[in-house]
Length: 297
Image 1: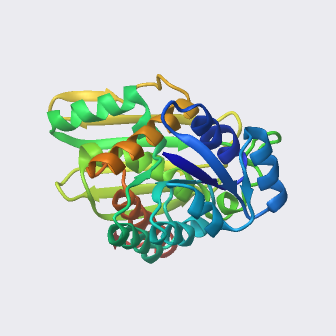
Image 2: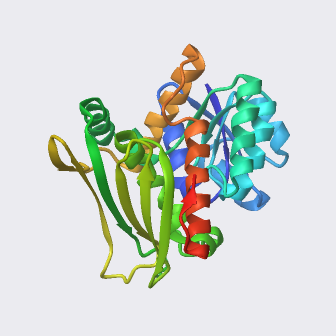
């Protein structure tokens, strides 16, 4: 399958393009970016064409891998789907639920495959854990903490404008939800509170009666970073296991997953519909944080 990368930033360069360039069954066939100079640099790095016109890139590939801010990703994903291209999307899918729903509808109408790169879900140790424990059932509570500190000198995401504006709720929230929803199920409603250093604290009520709490920030004190998830259920308590692959290998697994969906027509659990579901939850959390009310999802 021929892939085009949309985006020229750090993630596009060191994760997406790197994984595609070394994938045994995929071909990195071109790149496009909002900065022609950066696109040219990325294309030169991997020995592939840099396209000035995104429609020309669409015509040269079978699928696109998107590494762009979510408000830029969604409309381009719709255009790519309408051009008949399979979609390997980043998270969050969009910042506006309506824009996320439009991606889902465009992909369904065009009959193209979709996979959203919720990173944890393409890590074998995590995927095996979630699959086994979802089958076990009986989970009634979970707690996740994701305290990152990206606005430090030398951090590749320190200059990310969308992350500065929307914070850990939108950057880390999709990661957190991707490992909570499989065990506790869909979210019915939620409340939220602001904490110091732009920390979002969420209390989620799930449709089956379970409850989860999430604490998220990308601006933690440098010595106060923390990442972990705990689950509680009828069979005891457990924690999310550590990764057994790196990010490039995880993205390679997502590439394989998209090709499998395209070939078989099967739906992947991390498709655009899940991406839209997560966008709806995060938008409700944003509303709850602003209004200090319980918001239905």
